[in-house]
Amino acid sequence: MSRSRRRRIVAALAVTQTVGYGTLHYAFAVLLTPVAADLGTSTTTVTGAFTASVLTSAALAVPVGRWLDRHGGRALMTAGSLSGALLLLAWAQITETWQLYAVQIGLGAAGAASLYEAAFAVVIAWHSPAGRSAALLALTVVAGFASTIFLPLTGWLVDRHGWRAALLVLAGVQAVLTVPLHAVVLRAVPRPAVAPGPVTGPGPANLRAVLADRGFWLLGTGFTAHTAAVSVVNVHLVAALTSWGHSATFAATTAGLFGVLSVAGRLAVTGLQRRHRLAGVVAAVFAVQAVAAAGLPLTGRDAVAAVAGVIGFGLGFGVGSIARPVLLADRYDTRRYATIAGVLVVPMTVAKAAAPLGAAAAHTYADSYAPVFGAVAVACALAAAALVAVRPASRPVRPG
Image 1: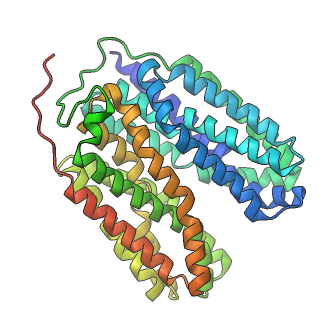
Image 2: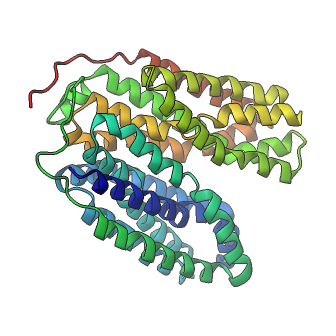
């Protein structure tokens, strides 16, 4: 299999994931307030549309995974990116709240077909075990800057031209940069495919063997708990820092460190896994996050301590996205990777949608962010313990 072909695929997906997350995901945060004002509704109602989008992605995770395992990513990712562009155009035309919900549900389906999970499945299929980590690192490091690029870009467009015109521009960017790359660069994996290497787990032809594996449930518990923790901090950190006496500018700037820190964490984990077992390395990072989250309510009123706590937590911010596909692909038959990953994504996505709402309720009840960050610390500790408990499965190398 051509090394240049693999490099072109990773480079193309790095671009499409950066643009896709920027237009279909991160732009929503900037558009939230102006859309709510224009529709004459509350930001809570508009946020509910985004929640519906996230839950739609969860509902489609398994069928999308099955499609990817059977047919590859070219057609599905092209269709997903094209529908995303068309739905952004439709969003610019809405006049009623129900139309917003319809568009966001459609964007959830478009994201399920064209964003990280589909891209990971393509990368796993095209790379041997030795090359997966580097390929996934390259992809996620570039895509990690999606918020850095598209949040200020969307804000500038809204300020200068209004939210409807901003969506038209984002739709154009989505159409021009993602659709051709998915259609032209992605190809079916040549057969015979990349040798799957040691099949160290069940190596199943169906999900029954996976669901009978204790390691799968431990991985699911760990990454679901971690997703919930990261989602809560991502939504509530700025408000928490402000409540502890910091200015809005300091809070936003400090939270903005997560983008750079997520890249640093991914680089560190990729380097460490060459000498240490990946599950153990990730567990250690999650444990550091637990300590950082637990300490923030106690020391967060001090600016230096607050920044230190955010750095401690931020180093693990993007670790799950690069570790999970590697752990799954190393443990199970890569010919069924997308389906297996889809099953795991469902509870993770539900946790991503529900955890911030639960945290908001806890804050309202206690009138304090201490229980919120206490729960984040417990979730990270649970994630670390679950990964520590994952034992390497033993199975002979598959012949041929």
